Structure formats: C-alpha cells, structure tokens
Image (cartoon, rainbow, N blue to C red; front, side, top):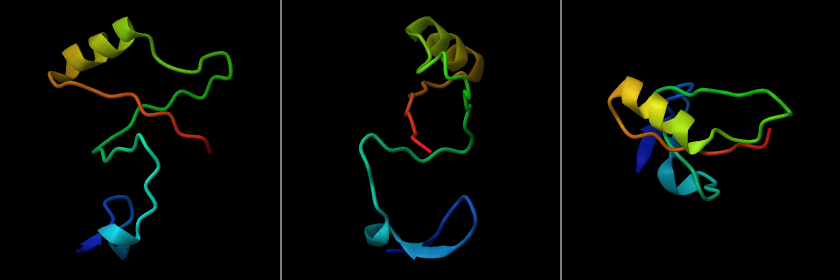
Amino acid sequence: MDVAAPCCGAPTSLDALDYDWPCGFARFEIAVWNPERDRFRRAELAAVAGALGHPVRQIRAHI
C-alpha cells in the first residue's frame, strides 16, 4: 500500500516501514526531555486523556 508519510509527505509503502513494538501513529506528540524522568505516571496520562477527551498511549522512543 503506497502512502505519503504524515510527518514529511515522503512517499513510502506500509510494508517497507520498520516497526518496533509498541509503535504509534499520531497527529501530535508530547515529548519529555528530562533524564530524571523515564515516563509519565498513570495519573498524568489520565489527566492528558481527560483534557483531550480521548484515550492516550505512552510510547517511549530512544533517539
């Protein structure tokens, strides 16, 4: 399936992407660049989900 990547519009196909579980596709992200924190707590995720009116998932990325 040929698609345009939502991040940059580059042409690709879904079977050519390299998926690493868990992965996600999102319209936006919240990034935490703090070496003292490795993830959001459940209460923080619930507060974000409540503010957005939609469930959220936390997916950690190693850059």
